[in-house]
Length: 138
Length: 382
Ligand SMILES: [Zn+2]
Image (tube, rainbow over all chains, first blue to last red; front, side, top):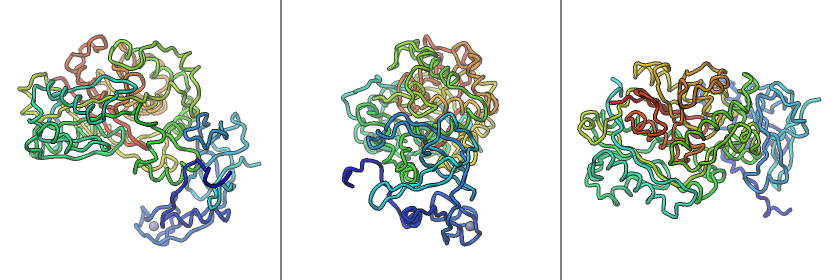
């Protein structure tokens, strides 16, 4: 598959989120940590809603979390996902106290439950784009 | 100071609902608007405020086509499906301030023939955050973004797909009785259970329609409403509410609570009534689960008890709280909930024909939009 045939939505990184996407390329899940008050936030955005500081440091998440909820998608809303059906999209509470969303790979749908431990992994989607995925722990 | 009884809905109008209108969105909105204005006994040139649905059509289009000589107020309330009821709040605020007297709230879309809903949302600014961080992962359409809310509710409270199905089935029954609805074939719980899974736990028959059509209302100041053609329907309580983490459901502290949970107590306090006083309710129903969650957030039942509540038959015609008597977005048409406002007004006027709720005096209508914005209006028969 050439890049031109990539038919899934592409992220358009902003100055606020570019380090997040660059981190994924290096197989790191980077989260914003407020330089003013230390609060970790996600998804990337310009301002801390606690102290209104716009200064951040980026910290690497441990990559471990627990399932908060999920959906199993059986319908491809864009053609690019047709070959992956059905796929699990899991919402996960990370150890750092924020949530992420990603496809959960290799999990038996009947095993899905709130609290299921998962770890973050990475998958090259195309040139210049790596996406986070999740795998059931153990 | 409050917006209680500041104004009334004085006119309602709709177009036919179809899969392919063959007409422009503006033409649909003008037809629905003209119907609403004439229903009120007004002339289009009497309109001095317009709150169009944010999108394809602007207030200037109505000035041009209606020859409105002196438009004094225009605004939009871009809350997705919560826009229409939130627009009533904006209209009342403008009326209360003395800016205008008769505000037109039109909506219309070619939601069926004009492009798939799942593709359209990617272009909307309120979906920018999920557009960057979730859509690339395969979480693209509202069904996929909302399904985890439903799943969480099921896991925490034991809510079942059959209970969601009761909402679809009862709504379909109302649509068939009502007469002006796109879906006219009876539906059973088994039909619902056999419908294909879209994004678990949401099946095809948990999802609303894609429709072409228009609907509109006129909101008038109370002192001008009395002498118009139809019995006024006064707005006694109104509020909008935005959920925590309004841009991404993933990050919401409590995924089972919508913006409506903040708005509903304000609207009830303004109106001086409680959920037990509501005779009929039109609940925004883009998906069955969103109805169930709103019934809880409004306080018709406790959080977690929405499943047994709907399963009891409470929401059916003749039940303790008939809802979506027109067939809603699930079975009448998806015109972003303006059809819910139209139906509530007809119920409170006693004009609802075969779906009329006996002695309906106080009613409620909600909107739900985007990632959980909510709006609610309580109205009474004038
Ligand atoms: Zn801070």
